[in-house]
Image 1 (spheres, rainbow, N blue to C red):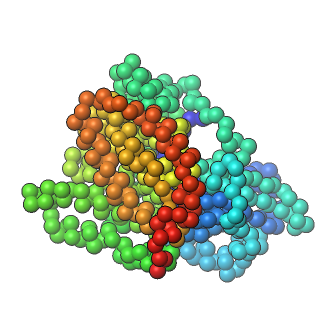
Image 2 (image 1 turned 90 degrees about the vertical axis):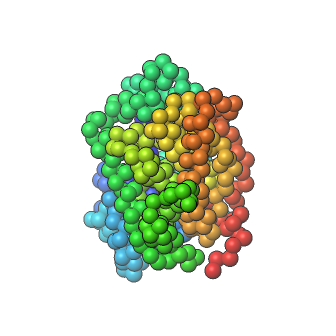
Image 3 (image 1 turned 90 degrees about the horizontal axis):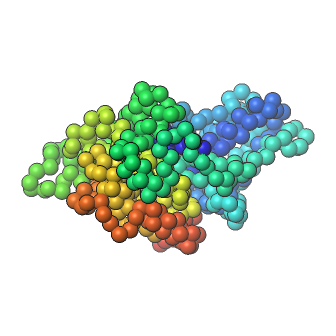
Length: 456
């Protein structure tokens, strides 16, 4: 199975890739299967059961809304976030839902979407079951899906199956060691190898345009986040901080000798703006998850603003970041519910550090080291969202992760690329740490800050 960098940076909506984007895709795939079977018109009722983390934090993460949108035929890439509230209210009030927008059924929200908070399926903590029945109550189709992080969805029958890189891909590295070896033999950079791999599947002009499109969506998201005032939804009454900080930075002008670290304030404001947009359900780019989606754009804005990054270097940035994300996806996890926030903010920090290192002229060895530093100092990071919302500590954590990524890159660039702990060893440690981590610290809101902060 060839996972493209375009799959890792997908355009969607907030607030969560695993709890909203993935379930929306699963629900849409379910009704599309019914359509292909010629049974869509036979459906009288669809019942949805959410398990594990999807049940425990699903309300705050918008899982129920996402499932309803998917059943109606909407995709994360195309749905208009401004229309979601009216859609949800309409379904709730009318108790009707049009499957794929053309076959209407009775749909009682609280009856047909069940949060099974005390049940977790053994394969993965993010699971949902969809059942379609006819007017007589007979089952037409039943399917279990797992939302495994970053918006990726796996059917139950496919879970755990080995994925193999296409034999046609010229540089099928699946570990950091293989990446270093293939780069040494080919003389190519990480982005050069990724470009060659991607061009097996995509036309070069299309790939370039799609990556630059993602950059434009990131820019638009940051711009909205910097200009939109107000309180974030969900009940915590979290005030958006990015607009006020943005105004102060604009008034202060460019950083000078009086405050040599003021450039980091711009990194913070972009990370906060994107993360606040995500929390509000806005449009953004998953990178590699929604909960960590502010880190890569913040570091990329830093590169463009202070290093005059052009379109070609932006494309290279995405390719390197995607390469690192693939290593974590292949050998560990991108799911906060599976390994904690080290699989989200930690991975995004590692991706951004590696990408910045290459576009600033670093060697492949320095790129690998930057990625290692970025994760090494996020090991053990828990996922304990207050109120099940992607707000506290998630928003501020993106700003911290972005600054850490820049420092990781600088450390790597000041060295030779030689280091004692390899990226592969850190990835394996992250996986093992996630397995050992108490479940209550993995996106359940049953431990950590989630139970030590008053929800008021």
